[in-house]
Amino acid sequence: MYIIEKAPAKINLTLDVLYKRPDQFHQVEMVMTTVDLADRIEFFLLEKDKIKVSSENRFVPNDERNLAYRAAKLLKERYKVKQGVRIKIDKQIPVAAGLAGGSSDAAATLRGLNRLWGLNLTLDQLAVLGSEVGSDVSFCVYNSTALAKGRGEDITELPAPPHCWVILAKPVQGVSTQSVYQSLQLQDLDHPDTEGMIRAIKQSDYQGVCSRLKNVLETVTLPKNPEVEQIKHQMKRSGADAVLMSGSGPTVFGLVQQESRADRIYNSLRGFCEEVYVVRLLGSQQRLD
Image (tube, rainbow, N blue to C red; front, top):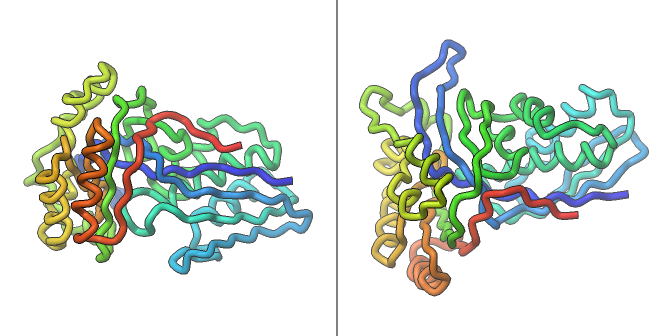
């Protein structure tokens, strides 16, 4: 018996950091949504009481460092499951890109094993478990559009934003999320209009969404990574309606409503970086049966 789950990438429409908490995590407020760039994950039931993870991507660990492995182990131990599983990850989302690829894999693992092992848990229950695996996992469990608060585990679902095309471009140089947060100057931040973004989404106001894109982590990542700033400038110059860095970076995304303009921006970026994608915005639950 086996099951397939789709693990889509996320982008941040807003990312705000409010303060540093006593537990040393940062209090965040983010509006996030999903795009049609996804890993495909297959789950094979094993009679032996083992967890096996495999991926052909050399940057994806096949052991306890893998978030999908950690999610499977947590679910197995918490609900005393005596069956095993082999998890095969077909990696399409760039690694260490600010697109929550590992978190989405972990969330898809929770959803997939919930079905495979017949646990009958709700998405809310899975999201609580996901918060123990990683900050973005709770959001990824719902696989939709949401406001995320706290460390990212306090989720309020939102309607899907207006349909549009999304151009993603990931520079070669990676970014350390931990170092970005450590370098953030909280007292100097120009905060996003989070409530305005939520209102624009609820009103299906595309221009309103575009005008409110904002990510405070750009204040750290852009000065240290000129290539990210260069990609942003190139996207704007090529006709993107709005451009923003996702997460702590380095991936930049641009929004357009016309496919022809998305293709033009895609072609203009090919000289800047190798990893460029044109995808549709999803924003609502997607499952692969």
